[in-house]
Amino acid sequence: MCERYVLPDQAAAEREFLPQRAWWQFAPRYNVAAQQYVPAIRKHDGQSEAIMQRWGLIPASPEADRPATVPPIVVAADDLLSSPLHRIPWLNSQRCILPIAGFYAWQLTPEKYRQPYFVHLFNRAVFGVAAVWDRFSGDDDDVIESCSIISVVANELMTDIDNTTHRMPAILRRNDYSIWLNGTPVEARAVLLTYNARSMHAHPISPRINSTSADDPGLLLPVH
Image (cartoon, rainbow, N blue to C red; front, top):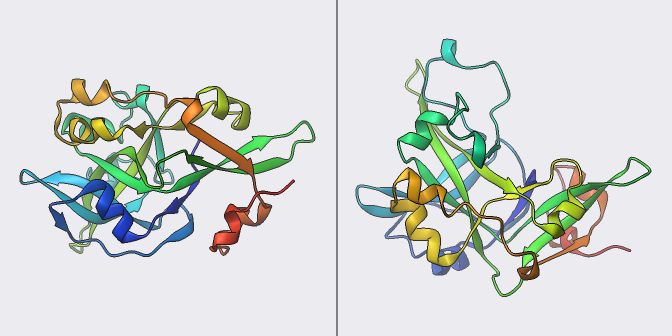
């Protein structure tokens, strides 16, 4: 699905998304994990802005109204309206795009071993995945802006790899960036499509990715 991913460098992300206002600051990373702060593009006051958000959505609703669960890093596109955590952000058009250079997926082998794979796109060194965000304000006026990646039904490549969930992140086409950020919920929902498998590549990698302490380019190297 998308438990970990790779961050491009900031200059490459800005060339891809051309934010009108850039408040973010980040460096390339090779093992982005849940609850870490990640770059995101969203619409604010009629302009696109580049910010940092926490990966794992914490809703704006009071603590008493929230399920006692780990903040979700992924939500299925079909669950946006039914999810108690994501329904309001979705209806309020609180959508954003996370810039990534690739992501990781795990294949369950017949021996019950989870083999990790690195997945990326041909001809797109940086691309965007669809997400929704929310803003939580605590009693101490601490504000946390956070997000969940949206998943869609896997294509044939991802079905072979992620053979337990059969899901993949909602990768946006460049022509759909503006629709995702500016369109109505109906228009935005229409661009949540399964990406073409022929435009993707995947190869097995070292199990070093299973540790969040590993974060270097060697994680991307293929193993046999």
